[in-house]
Amino acid sequence: MPAAAPAPLSPLQAEALRAGTLPPLEEVRHGVWSLTSPATSSVADASYGYVVEGSDGLLTLIDPGWPSPDAVDRLETALHEIDHELADVALIVATHLHVDHLGAADAVRRATGARLAMHPAEHRALAGRADDAVAADADIARWQVPAEAQEALVASWGSGRLLVDVVPDLLLDDGDELPVAGRRLRAVHTPGHTSGHLCLVEPEQRLLFTGDHVLPTINPGIGLGGRTATNPVDDVLASLARVVELDRPGADGLEVCPGHEYRFVGLTERAEALVAHRGERTRDALGALDALLGGAAGSAPVRGSGAAPSVWQVAEAMTGWRGGLRSMTGLPLASALAQTEWHLRAAGRAAHLAS
Ligand SMILES: [Zn+2]
Image (cartoon, rainbow, N blue to C red):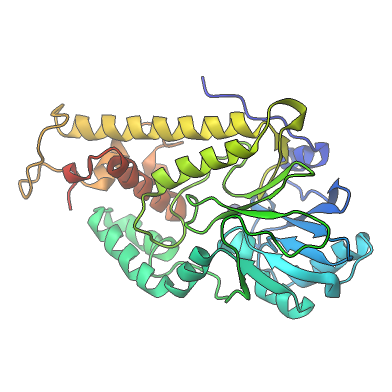
């Protein structure tokens, strides 16, 4: 039995999720608010940003959200609700490079004069995206994706992928304190979802801003940023252990302020469920691979004989994809295929795949 999803802390967010509407601005703690950024296409993909007020009255904006034409106007309206102005925003922090978090950053920076901060690995990924795209197109070919699915994969994962074009003013490494007056707000490097993903912890107020590292019901994808020499499966498992270390039992537990869905407590249990999910995916991929190899688990691959299955074949034989692999397209499909390969690599079975 999978662990039950944590209960929403905010009835407003829970109701909005149920109804498919946008949750309103909400005070999380004194001087900390959640904002909602609607996806250009649908309310369902809305993301959360957070405003943190320093003792000098200046604001830090965590994840400005989707790059819609009215993103700055929406932010200004929200800031007026809390008696602030655009010019009060002094710092923008991106948890990661995805368009639903970082997309509006440049427009907000221009409108506010704020500095933009991110992890160096996100900066490298943004700068290296042309090379990454070439490598991703090669992956799609190597995975032996059927022709009819290839175009959408190249558009969402390969050379057609939408990445935000923005250069940070400030780089945040693991352990760095953010320049926020009167508060301790610290960067925690949590690679996995992307290589430079950051969580931000406010230890005194027991808040953890998790971006897409930990969400209450969604199992976040992995390896969805720049390419690295490390395996995103190993990275995310280590990063889940990292945030569990920050948690405490009982009433002192961290309140999770995620990039989507709703706020909750029970970080340790949710992180454990995400670790278990990775274990299930590994077993699923290994079972499919062994079945395709004719039960020859652990035997040496026969290169060039046609015996080594492709990533596509293994992924298609896996049972854990909601709706089955054939129902997926675009980014979810690319993510599923990449995960299949990474899980097999992490289990030491990459040599059994067609290369
Ligand atoms: Zn997101």
